[in-house]
Image: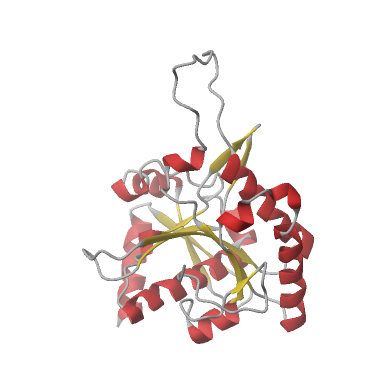
Length: 260
């Protein structure tokens, strides 16, 4: 019944020009739904998404088709967190998983995680801590070193201080601060979700992540920000809140992502 209701609602949104769909040639003729340009414009007016900068090609049919596999895996990861929140009585809703949030780091470059996750421990209205995480979903479509290089990008974001243009600094002005502090009280922890490879591939990628995290050029970033990795298989089988995450600096350990 719920599936039929969802189909009817999607069909109604399509009639209104807010969403469209493609059919994948494989995977059982799976239909993939995506927002139209008009749909993106409307959604960005929601208070929850105000100021959100959507990906440039989010409404392009060809781009959606090429990225469908990755997009479906990211969605599967999101659902795992939402289901775990319900299981434990925590607060995490669909709009608490925001894909591809743009974070400038200067010189025209930016860090764009696959998703930004908001997760509050305890029920709505409670006093549980609000946790935030940058989530990177890897489907083994790039080499381990390229994956590990993303840690360097997050380290740059952690230390990036925008320089005001056209205004000389005065001695009495307040010190400049890192740009991420305008959005987050604490820098979000960094979660790597590994998929589409076997146990050996998982170990190879975690080894590369560990090497990147121990690079002296990153300064204190790995000490100040938890960097964890887990396989999607473990997340789906045990739930993201289970101790299935391996700190990349101490990969022999297994911890829960939401614990201090």
